[in-house]
Amino acid sequence: MRRVLVLALGTALSTAALGMAAHAAPAAKATKPAGAAADPTIPPSGWTPPRTAFGQPDISGYWSNATMTPLVRNTKLTDKLIVSPEEAKGLEKAFAEALAEADRPTDQKKGPGKVTDKDSAEAKLVAIRPDFAAAGGDVGGYNTFWIDPGAHMMEVNGQYRSSILTTANGQPPPRKAGGAPAGGRYRDNYDSYENRSLGERCIMGFGRNSTPPMLSNGYYNNDYYIIQTPDAVAIQVELIHDTRIIRLKGGHLPSNVRPFMGDSIGHWEGNTLVVETTNFPQSDAFMGSWKNLKVIERFTRVTPTRVNYQFQVEDPDTWDKPWGGEYNFAPLKGIVYEYACHEGNYALPAILAGARRQEKEASAAAASKPGVH
Image (tube, rainbow, N blue to C red; front, side, top):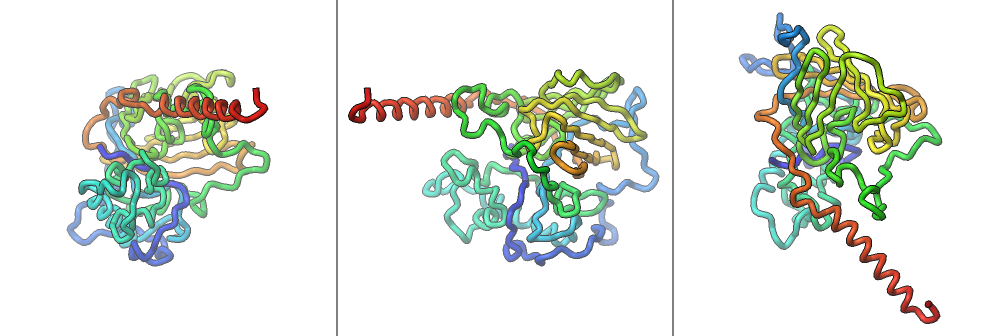
């Protein structure tokens, strides 16, 4: 399976490479020619969601949230949430050409993650999406061959979206002064494996495709298996085989009990599963927020082949008001397989071994200086 790179924050799109206008056309519903197949994101006339044997709306099954649509809107491309079908197809074409070129054998002179031919489709893709310059082009970074952002822009109710976020400008709102920093705590800390991220330690998936809000992950494995029972809903995520349990009975755990992925409780409102998650541990902070973070999610089977997902994020200590986004899950063509994380994973011991060697060399250099005993 190709590895999926999240289409995320603030990239500078090249309108020349995409052949698109600098600004999107006014919001317009996607249209299909006469005789075309029905749009899978629009509920068929008279359709009602299926039900489980115990009467719940059925959202179970294998799903994917892989998408070319970025989390945050690129305002250099458009200031609108909705883009025209022509613009969406143009972006999809740019991705398809780059990925097809990357399917050819890698030029060994370039090395993994390095793009030197400015006229190649891969170089053009990196020009439009700098986040595709794997690991900043460093040794060990994935090249474009390994990424798989799906084949399409996100479409919700017949409209192509320019961002997953549905805020007015498609950006996260400003953070309050004095709030916790948005960055991770583990970066550039090599004292112990306990200081490294949960993803590096194969405890949980990196990115945020399992912990609410569930977002398209930063490299690969945006695949889910949803299982329903009368008392709970389980969401198994392919990446590092996380399984999140949403309890349908009872209240939240005490505030001092903070499990991985937070504490999720849910209930049904008509055809929609509403989930409230609190009690996040600091290791699962979202943009710096964790202690008072609350995430409200809504899962709704809107067509035979789509589950709509909406999320709202709130923390009065971090943001002035709640904000969020929306996308659709699409059917996964297959099942969720084991994610073998530890096998062949030499990164963590190598990182720590490198840090110990640097410390040893620094100590030896200091000891060799005159007057140092």
